[in-house]
Length: 291
Image 1 (spheres, rainbow, N blue to C red):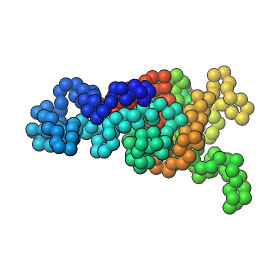
Image 2: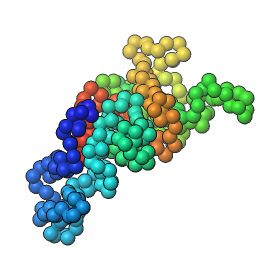
Image 3: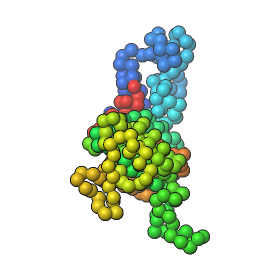
Image 4: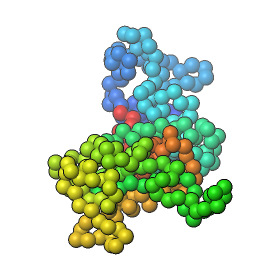
């Protein structure tokens, strides 16, 4: 959904609140603390605050945004919806500096809702089956063509670098999962595959990295030597390689740097967008995250 449509649907704070109340309560308001339906909207005060409710059972006050990504935020809801639209429309992700410029906010104020949105995207758990492609990659650092000025040698690439280690798996014609890991041992890879893939109904394709051999003992497994060819009789890892390209373009083109602690959130955003490409991601995310 484009920005014009979002602004037409949600022209002001009142319209945003009314939409959220319809979406979550469907005409029957309920206290999020005690689940009582004995609630009543509070009268607007002199400052024009709206959207608060009183519970007559537990005597608490609450907003429609309680328990959602907008809980406790001071950002106008219209800007929140615009932030979701901008993020879901940005194929190669969006930096907090760019979002701040687009919405007329300070960078730190824009960064917080972005993190909440990405965390919500990370709740989308999927289970793969059928033909599964799995691979490992490294994110961050400088381009490999650069030199280490202190040592006077080219920077390392792949295994052995100080970059963030990431593993991923994609079901052909299905969804992708990716995860930040502390190492690339066979045990770590096997644990990741078993949590994201139905091993009984799946066939695994990987490159010839020895760390993949452990999981290969527990499910059907074929490998491809990518130094010789990229595909052999349908055996390839081109799909997951394409996803890695998407992830790294976001890193190089938009973020340039993020600390290891926030790498999982950026991966969650990339997976969510890839999993629901071709759909109205704004509507899907808005509906599911606000109910």
